Length: 410
Image (cartoon, one colour):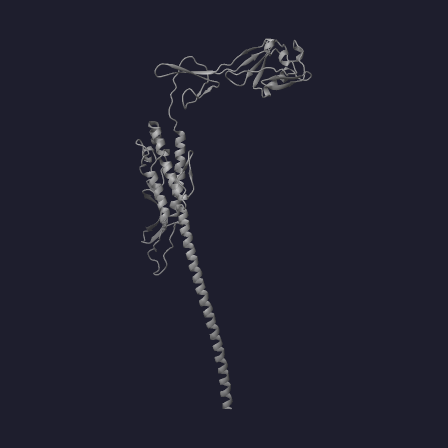
């Protein structure tokens, strides 16, 4: 166990004020570890000066033993550390008056480094030293926290800690399921409802329910199929020990819910229908919760193989990340590198370009139809004006003929 350096004064102070010192304390400052501490012999006493020492950046703790009348300086740092007491520029004689300088006979005890002695399998031993009670160099990848000194040997058992790996895999499952769930919602088929028995002939059927905005979009379905294939197929060259996620506890779900029309018949024979969620057998592409026991067993048996399967050169992260870079056009970044080559036109950008072209074509058709409709409207207005003019002429002629015949009869 580490011990800190201690510095013991030789003078018996006999009290807490400078009046009890053999040599009266002068005002000014003194230095500990290069830090200047001020003293005022008209207002300070021993305890106030010790408080200044403890609150300073000198890195020591000053304590007073009333039984022996001695001051002790103890380094805050463990191990073989030194305490530099005094400086040639000091203007107060506090250190000399209290017997804390080597010239005045103060004694020091150097702190001891912590040590751990390891016994090798062949029988030999090796001792590792540390300036801290936390030893990280004795066993690679293992931190030893020394709580007390011991002379009898004891055994340390080291095992793999899979907790961080489990957390990382669960984070991946959540992100993957969120993406697949969004695609499933966007591409959901509509529920086409049939007209109930007894409805009026010729009445319109009930409207369809639940269609996703991307229903029927084959391109989006291709993305989903590729993602599902990544997590469910054998990962080539991932390693011979484990080459599929199912071997380490990641499997696709085996049931999901789907909107369907449900029809029921009451005792009188009348039928009624409603749209509701129906449990379906099979998978919709999402992953089940991680089988932690299976994962931990595989991780304990061969952690390197599990790591290669997930994040190796041919593992899941690289393959899926490379594919997603091509889909989104954005780099997939891992802790070590960027995955995939950013394409000139990503898959999603290609979809967007095609949709924009189709939208532009439809807008041109709408504009053409609108122009044609305006032309026809203008033509109909012209014909209407001509008809109105002709009718007005016929009415005037009729009035003239009426006047003529009336005059002839008279």
